[in-house]
Length: 503
Ligand code: AMP
Image (cartoon, rainbow, N blue to C red):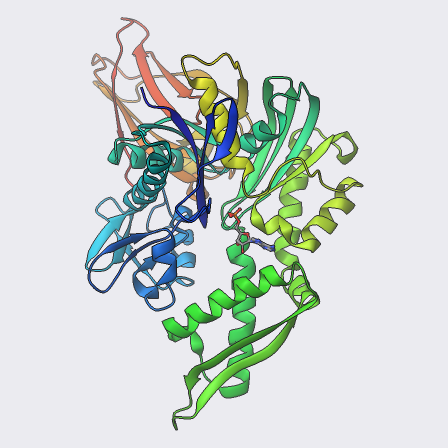
């Protein structure tokens, strides 16, 4: 059996780690780098590029370069998220047969799970080169705020490349493992994870080898990319007001601005001001070249991104309330994700908790390290016994009359978990019962994410209301839902089919 590796499959960057000779380490890529950009592209000769190779040609080939696709995984084409994404990226999306999202790159269409599979395969390849053996099993991390369908999509991506995703764990939980294993702790920690594309908060009680998540929350549309976008919007507005030209329609100019926005943002974490200069970004109708040239200050960046930081703190406050926590009861605040290096984020958090964040974990490495430690504990020969008690991030329930959402598991319900409800028939001779299952926190289903239509068939026909069936909802340790049902009179298991028709 091959070793189980830990994979942090990030929105912007991915990396892998492994426990070897009693120590945990990140798996290095060719030049000694640990991070692989989560980018997939098709070049003009039709070659597929993944990781650094894809990132290098991004500026010249934005139309066929896919990034941040993790934000789209497990979404239906009609969702607001897809529309929002389409307005900020140069690659094109279109609806698939089941109203899922297809990415139209090169001359082909790719499903989201396929793109994730390609990135996973790249990471697996790097690990194989390093370990000099085949890698067929991995623990993969996902944002705590991922729904059942998004988790399922990551599992499917693994299947496509014969990589068994032995366990999916939440990113903040993985970071807590990296922090807490082997320290014999008795602490409550808050993990504030602001990465490239997603934001998660978890409150976790660590009692030696027991890691119990008390509450979690997040936003998979809040991350470094949104900080970049705020800067980009500012630059575009400024340029349009000076020259009356909209650069948004020029993919190459946009890519140059995007790259520089991110670099400037990172610079401004270390200095007070930085030049923002893009020479020959476009031309006037008369053929005169135009440049972007001004200075960005840290103060400007902080002011324009205040709403983003505020949003993260509102979510943090809600999760604290859900856990019945007050800031003074937090023993350690762990910062995870590259965007937490922004000084104002640290300042606002220090003010919130009345103390500075812990230096206990590396913001870029903790998630992969935690995944590898957990992977190691799952090995047959491991003597590390870990107990992970996680929760679901959003309620799971079913549609009732009038589109009302009937909650079966409230948000922050502990997993694994199972619940049974009783149902009956509503008309004579009925042999099937259908249920539409959603995940979300809104009282009406229309605002929640559809997980699937479950159909229970094989009921004995009889008068309305006489059949008694028990429907069981089971949420696995990975936050994935399965359903089953039983005829209570005969004890017979009914046949269950799931159809994820997306709307
Ligand atoms: P991650 O998903 O953890 O790799 O986070 C990547 C995000 O962190 C990207 O949006 C980066 O631009 C951002 N980032 C990395 N370093 C810094 C820094 N020093 N200051 C601000 N943002 C950063």
